[in-house]
Length: 195
Image 1 (cartoon, rainbow, N blue to C red):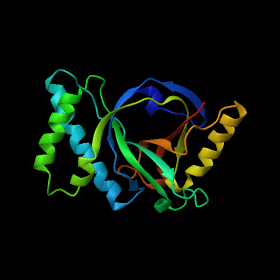
Image 2 (cartoon, rainbow, N blue to C red; image 1 turned 135 degrees about the horizontal axis):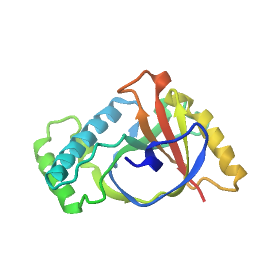
Image 3 (tube, one colour; image 1 turned 135 degrees about the vertical axis):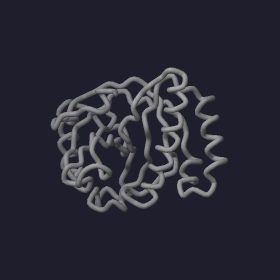
Image 4 (cartoon, one colour; image 1 turned 90 degrees about the horizontal axis):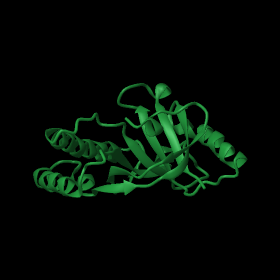
């Protein structure tokens, strides 16, 4: 597991990441919606089959925590209303996952899953190289609707260092989420790129 990605403190810190391969669902969803859960289902189905194929070739690994890239439709509303948060999900993949294996697995699954709920999201899932470079990250504990408090601390930290946020979107890594603990115990690593 990548420590820079999946470990964080309750205080902000700067990290520099190398380019990494991800499966990304390019079809946008609203946070905590039924569609979001369906998109996650398709992403994990694809990831588990790739994991099995790579195991046959000698690469053994655990699936990493789910990640997402999100932005606010209306910054004035903020994170209090999950209908105001749109984005997509992603899962880190091993460096040796090649395009041809990904395309082979995806093509086969597209044929087999035409009647599945996640088909439309599965169709929009791609293997991409993500290059985040310099970012600020911090651990947020609690409901997603309270993330703004953590972002305020991160943005103050960036300002004090003379750094500015590059994009309106941000990344989240779900260390403990709705699938495992009550919302008061969620652990989410928040991250945004800076320069």
